Length: 483
Image (cartoon, rainbow, N blue to C red):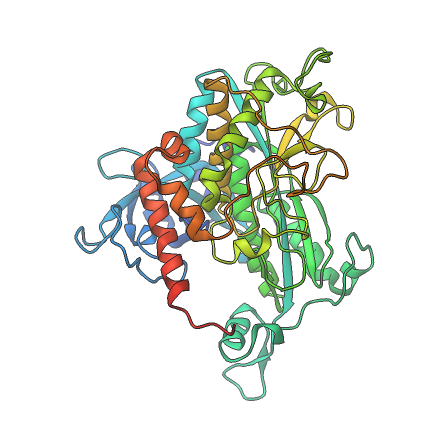
């Protein structure tokens, strides 16, 4: 049977031919922190479970990113249920080959309860549930993602031979256990955004990132230096929101694995260095007509009497979607700012939004409206600028979609005026409320009874996710830091 070029058309019947020359397959699923956890399995084993799914230890939803079990027993995985198995279902449409691992085949999985329901805390499933709501209305959702990250030169580490040495991210981890974090050297020094010269110093690495992303089906649309020592930014190719979330998570995996081979350690944490801008993870979203592909945020005729001048070209549906995001944003802050460090980025005067705010082409507001006259009608969209590069893309996109859909369902109107050009976030003209200043404040708001998060995601997800954030907060409260 001929194998289709587009994985979207793959079926179980195609697998024997697709994997004819392979002896093994890699599979992975996304955990609550956006890390892809997985394993290698034999081709025989993979073919036997491709239809039914396979057991996967639920502990990946019972521990943090350092494999430390949560202090608070959460419902999905705990001592009482023996850290039971959940079911991982293979998504055939996610097929790609891993270029830095001799083109071994790879598939993403979603996690399900053994009884047959999608797992409440599975990030891919959470996004899928939001997409089902808009699918029922005849809408489609498109998204794009932009990630900034710092790069550091991995220190030299002795290997088995006293005369040999290697540089990779494992050496960086060892170095940071023994040295102050500021001793780790940046890949380059100084501030030089959009430099055409700087990438040439490490051009093998620079082009390997770009080319591996193409081969790994997480294509980069734009790739450049950003302002900061060793800081780079990649804009990923715009596409359907479920596939976009997958590509965003896989992009980070690609960058980390490719970079390590060049002795370079990338860092996606929100604020790696004091006194410098942090790493953003901006997400662009629009809704489309599923049948025609038309952008539903674009207004057919200019509104001559709009509630705000900035929305003259924005459709009524787009206005309600924007109103929903603005109304619910404070209640989902732990999703767009999930770590202690996230809130070091969200401070005044560092190109990061700190209030519930919006504006046409306003790059300091929480929500930047991109619309005519500076963009064509088909490019009308919202850029959510609160999220950092440390976020889980599936959760962020699920939150944007859920809040926007809630705005449509409730026919919400925009309650706060836009920020004008030259008006600062947090200034006198900014009428939006201040967003949470730390993870504890944000988590308390998200978990409270009747929160918008509980309304759009349900109690099971909110209880689990907030439990994971409370774990993070407790570890921080117990830590004795350099400060």
